[in-house]
Image 1 (cartoon, rainbow, N blue to C red):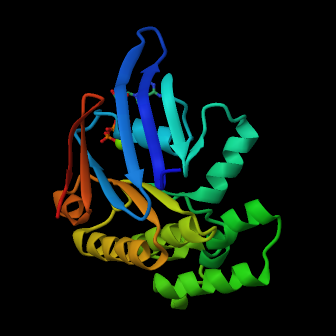
Image 2: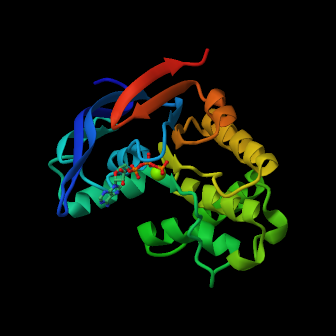
Image 3: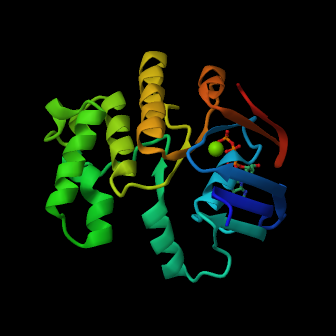
Length: 230
Ligand SMILES: Nc1ncnc2c1ncn2[C@@H]1O[C@H](COP(=O)(O)OP(=O)(O)OP(=O)(O)O)[C@@H](O)[C@H]1O
Ligand SMILES: [Mg+2]
């Protein structure tokens, strides 16, 4: 069995409505484990649609997605949710932290959902992640009472808590200034190296894309360019 994080075959997506629009036109893509990949492309080129399909948050109109060599197209909703929760961490442009909970509680939330309660080992790992992303001094603050960069680092730690093999990030630094953006990417690279996590990151930022080992450019719902940076 091939050692791929993700394999996409012939992914097409048409959105319904009065005038159906086809936004992905047969995407084939193989993402090796432990790799760091950037997806770039103009607004409307289909980046988020593709990432949502990769993460099984959305289904393709046709084509197949395999996650860690497991084909997803025949799985029912609960099997899919289980696979997703166990293998994928998501980071979005907006952090979607729960405002009535602290930094620590937000980070633990995916574990709480998966396990039903918080184990001692998960609490220990949450604190390790808090150290890793540099949030020790605000870990008991409410998610609303920290800076934008700290909120995004909280969201990153939350994406890691279930030790996912794969992280999918849709413009994770889209709402941050350039200095904070650099820090967040340094952190993502560190996670990639230390935990061997596979990354697919959508970005508008050329500087950020160039730090990835592979850049995939979408144009009008097709792969226009796909190359390694070194
Ligand atoms: N739920 C939807 N229903 C209908 N059309 C949609 C839907 N979501 C996205 N689209 C359309 O699909 C195309 C691709 O959208 P998508 O969000 O994937 O682009 P994107 O590359 O992520 O753009 P951006 O850089 O602006 O985030 C666009 O033309 C968009 O209008
Ligand atoms: Mg998008």
